[in-house]
Length: 103
Image (cartoon, rainbow, N blue to C red; front, side, top):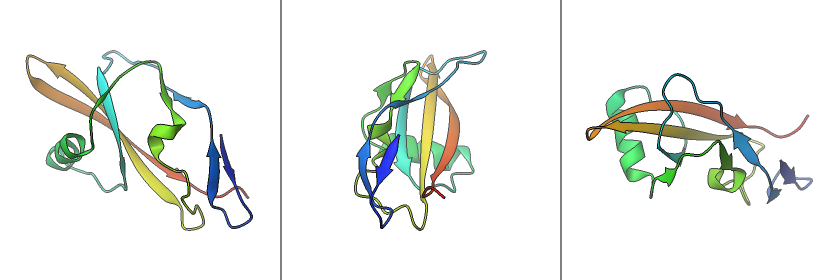
């Protein structure tokens, strides 16, 4: 849950995003700002440059989306990148999430 002030600036963020594993669960994830990651090379570069990967659980703390003090008026886009690594080879699933002000 995100709470904003009258100007749509986030001042409180609580809870978590809950994910359901499909046929192959990932082991780690990163959250990066923006979207537009359309190729494997783009996603791989964002994952490798997105900070320290976190262990994948069944939920992701909303704080990992780094929205505190963000203005939602123009929408804020984040990409959640879930990685699965087998024998040193990574595959990814990317979720592009847009956060907008309440209407």
